Amino acid sequence: MALPPPLRTSVTPAELELIACEQLVDIIPLVAMERTAFISGAYGPLRPPAKCKVPIWMATNLKLKKKCHIVPPDWLNVDFLQDRLTRETSQPEFSELPFRFAEVAKVILDVASDDISNPEKVRSLLQDIREARQAKSRDGVSKLDHSELSLPNLCAMEINEIRPFFVRSMGVLTQLVRQPDPGRMDQME
Amino acid sequence: MADWLEGLDLEPNDRPRAGPSFVERARHAPDDDYPIADDFGRPNLLGAVEEEEETPFQQLTRHWMNERQAPDILPGQEMLLGRILDHVRKQSDDVQLLRADPDSSEDEHFRIMLVQTEIERVKFVVRSYIRTRLYKIEKYARWISTTAEVHEKLSKAELDHARRYARLTEYHFNQSVLQSLPPQQRSLEDDMAFMPPMIPEPDKLRPVFVHARQECPPVRLPDGTSIAMEKGRISLTPYYIVEQLLLRGEVELV
Image (cartoon, rainbow over all chains, first blue to last red; front, top):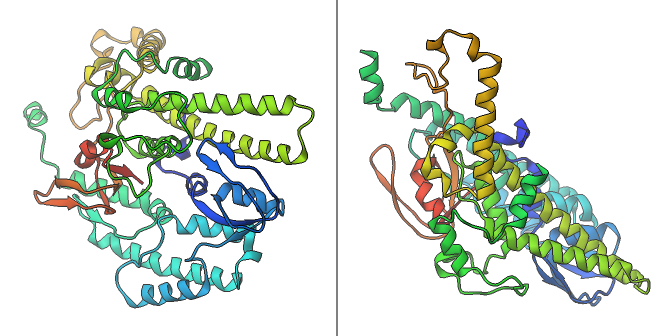
């Protein structure tokens, strides 16, 4: 089979993670490296202790070999997330977060929790935000019709999560309102 | 699968069925040995993409996701694929060269490892992209071989495969079952009321999640209203509504 059945209807979280890991992140290298050409661009030179921007996949790779510290993005800290959680629970709409925040946060927390201050708190805030947003997206089902549903500030992982159900629901609604095909009607008569 | 990849791989310049968008891309594509941060003017192609220019790999990733989400088969990105594969080959050659060098230091090994990691990541996306197309081509093989408008979206290798595949399955159905049935039941194209068609076609009514990459002209919705697809908007809407925007690269599927 060209494409295994589980991959046919949706993208997997692992694939979303792969895409998210192309994003750049600041690192503080612990080893020196000349500027090197990669397919996605040239990175470096790494000159400890100067900061450098590299893709997340490279940062995690270096981090796992204890060759760098990852500087977490501005939004990955207790203050920012606490603020977002307050907004998320007090306002009806989704608050603004980076499109791939869930993937990036997971990767960085997994490999570099020691570079984040208070990682446990960050984790629990992320979990709370996720739950608050999930409740909202479930409410979104009631607004679903056959033509269009606008989802401002929804993130990649969340879209992927609601995809199977929403796509199917809208498909059913589309069938219900579909104009009868004249050709078919003639045939039936 | 192997010679499938090869076909695409070896004929990046052989494009007898170039569709309009393809020609457009070809015209604006930079030469083979492009610098890493290529900032070529590609106004029609990418328009206002974020602030930074999309790298070829980012473009491929976008097309890969589009292909995965879209119910219909999208125009093949042969040119882009060719460039990426050339780049992969070049990086692999460099790695081979460096590894063969006995004087390379610890530091070198470490760089080589990073370069190889990236090569594998790129290869994964390339493979997944091709597999997605292959899946659609086999699923819709009979529809593709009879519908001329689709042909320009496929590369020569892909179209040949679709035709061959359709012929093979038809032959197989005939040999194994149909020839033993009464003649009026042998057809592979019966059109029965209330039954799905026997030749599967892409379901363009299927809803997709779409993200506007730039300001788009308003689109007309099935309920008669129209909406402006402003930049950054994320919507769930039937595929046919955004099909044209997608083909022009103004929106992406997420």
